[in-house]
Amino acid sequence: MKKICTFGAGLLLLVLVLAGCAETNAAPSATPTTVQPAPAGLYGPELAAQAFQKGGCGACHIIPSVKGAVGTIGPDLTNINQTAQAALDKGEYHGSAKTVQEFLAESIRQPDAYIAPDCNGAPCQKGLMPSTLANLFNDEEINAMVQFLMNPPKEEASASQEENAPTPATQTELINEEEFAWAKQVYFERCAGCHGTLRKGATGPALTPDKTQPKGTLALASIIFNGTPRGMPDWGKQGFLTQQQTEIMAKFLQEEPPTPPEMSLEQMKATWKVLVPPEKRPTSPQTRRDWENYFIVTLRDAGQVAIIDGDTYEVVDRVDTGYAVHITRMSASGRYAYVIGRDGKLAMIDLWTEIPQKVAEVQVCYDARSVEVSKYNGQEGDFTDKYAVVGCYWPPHFVILDGQTLEPFKVVSTRSYTFDTEEYHPEPRVASIVASTYKPEWIINVKETGLIWLVNYADPNNPTIKMIEAARFLHDGDMLTSSGETVNWP
Ligand code: HEC
Ligand code: HEC
Image 1 (tube, rainbow, N blue to C red):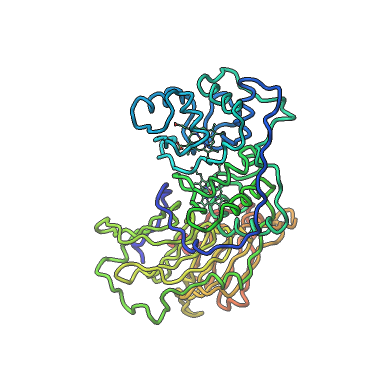
Image 2: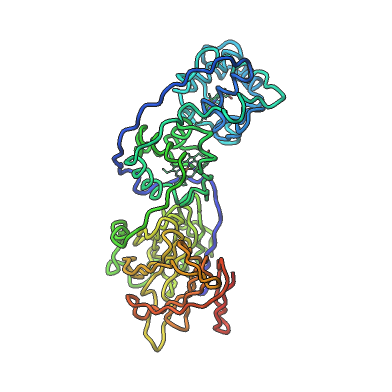
């Protein structure tokens, strides 16, 4: 146990393995999008700027002199006249365009006629630029955009006065209550882990209305359907969301984020899986490697951990966990690793098998940061690896689970009063949790109320909790093992 270390490394761009994405959620059908006619009386750069905005082009492209056009999912269009000429000259292009103008018009009308090679350092993805964008525009608008891209004006081109600035064409219709409820649930189950419970951004960017509205439904839906090479999963291509469902989701993202849903014990249990029951697990280490000298490395955006042999530096295994892995804690015996994803999914890995193996998993919240195990063994009993605890940001609670099977059985809310002003706080988040080895206790930091909770788990269904006034926004904590003192700091 002493030699086992864990640490996190934010590795980007690893292959995403999305467990359990095959199931489909029924959603009400979407209303078709309407085509807005081109506004009369605009010329040249103004008409082009209007059209770029209408098509949500800036969600995916950098376009010089166009406000908000800073997207990096598609190619940077700053020097498109030169890149287009180079593509025509190199002979890699097999479409029907002869001139740069024709090339650009074709890029908008049939994006898949030629796939650009470089999307801001990542390979460009076929199908991501929506082919239906062309339906939004008349020839005049396409011409205006082509001329603009050929020779972007030095000054910022604005389509009209700020107050009647155009909205993307596809953003206009709202979703109904049923669609909203569906999207809310799917968002919290599938998206919150990476984009944040309140959509303020985490591994993925913020998806608040100020960011999403300028992009419009068509661009957003296409990103949700196709994914991107930089870590956004392809929900449509995987068969998890239909085209219509991605549109509903795109519209939902343009509305104010709703209060996230609660999670009951019953809902947690529905996600609970024991992959290898305790009685089927080995009774002694089966591997010839020094399992006490493994490193467990967080592959955050892959939703995995890598287990590395500290003697040989070989990657012994990569194990699927929750999204955006936050931390790993070793069990008291050192045999198990407990890995928590920010999406609230807990995975338990047995290091004794020849190849380390996930033996149980469960989701106990939509947004989590901490996990710990019972580590006390003394006069009051032997609690080695008996219970586990997960601390959540949303819903604001912690959950006590069986340490061997991960069956959740006790949920404790942290909604309470701030220690200093004694004001009610509706969402005090659970930050770090540390297990005492001197008492059957977990030391739980409750961020917003500024209280350190000493939770005694000797009788976990009826836990006693001592609340210590500390400081607001408690975050991390650790144990000074030499003296046995507990130290927490904000
Ligand atoms: C959802 C993202 C997305 C939206 C919205 C989008 N594009 Fe694209 N665009 C891409 C991607 C990805 C590529 C590269 C793949 C390809 O060549 O088809 C691309 C390619 C292009 C190219 C060719 C670039 C080259 O180097 O060959 C042009 C021109 C272009 N887009 C213009 C536009 C315009 C104009 C709009 C709005 C009317 C728009 N795009 C909307 C993603 C998008
Ligand atoms: C594994 C993490 C992950 C999950 C889960 C995830 N996303 Fe993303 N998402 C990303 C990343 C990373 C990006 C940025 C991609 C890029 O720049 O190429 C992104 C980008 C996006 C964008 C484009 C935002 C912008 O400003 O360009 C939208 C819209 C989006 N995600 C919606 C969703 C929805 C809806 C879900 C759930 C169905 C979801 N995401 C689930 C990681 C994730």
